[in-house]
Length: 269
Image 1: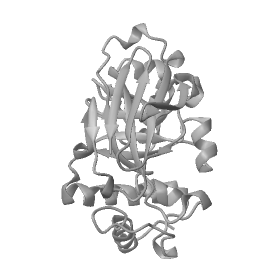
Image 2: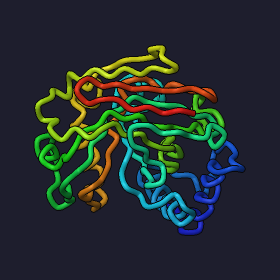
Image 3: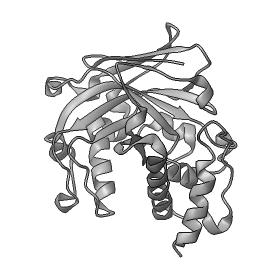
């Protein structure tokens, strides 16, 4: 049975406690308002996003895709990708400066991002890598900022369905320069490197993302939205997945990612 409107409202109130100056870690939701499946998790997520927009995070301008690589699936104990929202106020360009004290447990990921110049319509599903490629305006090196807002994610508390409801750790984005002639690159062969305070902490390739190519992740999310009758609009930002396992940072850290042919991005805490 789907969650009732009252249960969704209660669940949103609990998830909301994981953000802001008085944030507390999110544990297991009460049974009556916990998502029992992915559909419930997405209903909770949409309701949470409406509240966060009203409270000042700004409009939802894109989507992050989580667990698109084997390394991240093994790390988080999942067997499939999932998605969360990106809010306008959390996006930075080239270099982002973040207040370390506003996070519960902040981490970073080395990603490839895409921005659309045309709508990917639910009416045109199923989408393929070839069809979504035609809608990509630019491709970027990117850092995703993630926040472990959870009681014990290593022990899967509260678990992946609640993580999805809470936008799957999403907390911000730093975009590198737009590459509008990205078609000349073999995105599957692009190598990404992450450095913290100048020391390399991880590296990976575009082919490490779902089905061997970053744009397969874009096709996946276009079809995922289509399954709920939703479009990906023109201008939408999509974080396609991390090629490096999440790294947790400390106050004062500077993070840099560089992806061959795509450029670089930086975040300071």
